[in-house]
Length: 195
Image (cartoon, rainbow, N blue to C red; front, side):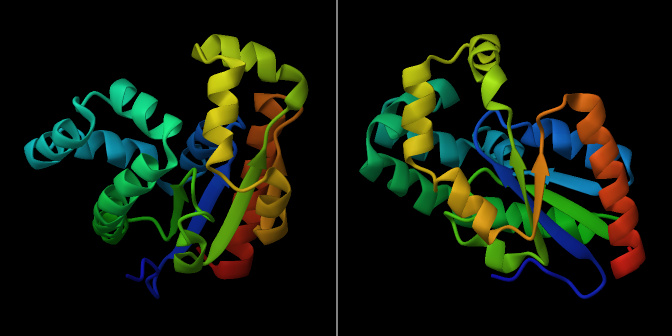
């Protein structure tokens, strides 16, 4: 499946859990981009009766927290879920991208590189979180350090994401600084790509 279209610039946005991807996505929206979130699309899919039936058969529940507990504890289960959901997420993303009126579309995907979706985009951005504030962010999100490590275990190391990215956004000086970086990046993309 190809997500790109000739009249739009599709930007993949990724980063580790709690790096600030969602905050970055909101700033892209504030600067005129159409935005898509793979996690939001998955939440939509969890409301589809056929998906609920399949998840309940596999995991005993179709509640996101219950499914997450199962898949982050068992790599085979996680891969089975991804194989089932990823094509559905891509199909939804493609439809939403076609509907977008904006020329710049930013697609936030936690597993952008792991799923190979970086090959479906025009440009890829990695957000780097502030390690010094990680403990506070884990507490705010209600995650333990163990849960955080289990989730990271299913992802590429941050260094590899940085190596593969076209743009790296360091999110280490707070939201205001991140917002300014994204404003400047959007202006640059508009100049370079005419979006």
